[in-house]
Length: 397
Image (tube, helix red, strand yellow):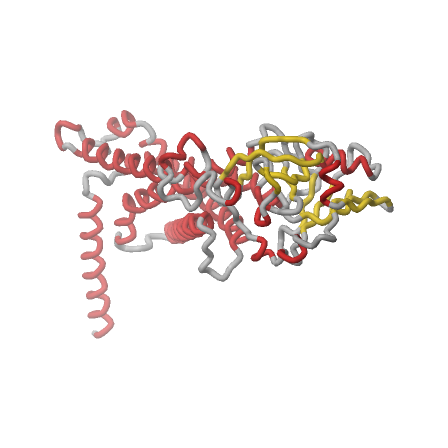
């Protein structure tokens, strides 16, 4: 008898939840058509983030067979700027998508079959992974890491989870997506009422306009840290172009890198080595070599970019001093005692590129200590974390 009462009470609560879900789904802005429109925009944003994120990842951790373009010089500004902008744009899209479908979580019974149970679990994985992915990605742009797990590895792993779960979700919902992909198809199917009869379509349009306006706002108000054309509207991004010592932002200071003493030591030299042959050059000797001037950006993984004028010695000419062949790759090493970016590898196309410099000056002045004094690497089409500061050694690999 007690079990029967519990079953009856559970059924009553289920019917109540189902009725509440049905009432929520009757909101004029909620419909399969709305969900499909927002979903395809969100899917596009996720795929753009995934592709540009993989490019950034493999630039930093390449496979031996990989080769990367050196042109245009601001290629990484474009890919990573788009990555961060698309990631920020996905936040209002994701929230709108969840709003359009969350009443389905209250439908009764919660599980109708084994296949339905699997589908709901996969949707839960997709939603959870997507929320964590965009939240941690946004925090990374501010260089704020309140979580204990490593950002880069987790961000990459979750990207694969999101894309995999998204592919399965799209496959499962493909008939609905096809039916509602175009508005006229949805009307013919009877799922979109006539505008004049109910006004539902007008409500949906208003909702979509609000979502579109939110996406445009968050992009316009933050993308100025990446793209100069929007710099005047950059109100909320963590970085401002041209703001910092010598007009260039600083991610990691000399104090944080623990190189203040070694970088300002008068006995500092830059060692260039190829096999058993090596040469140690003081800063004065580097300044006495032929100097090259270039304009190259510092484009960081957090999404900000600033172009700057650099002056220094071509890495290729330094490698020539020790007899390195034209096809040699090189590794540069920083004075930093530890850290994942203490060294940086230059494949031959970058090592011998005429714009790849050991920079000694920035904006017509000697490098600021926080920008890599006494010498730093600058090269085209590379992330800022690979533009190694406080150089101490260059060697062929």
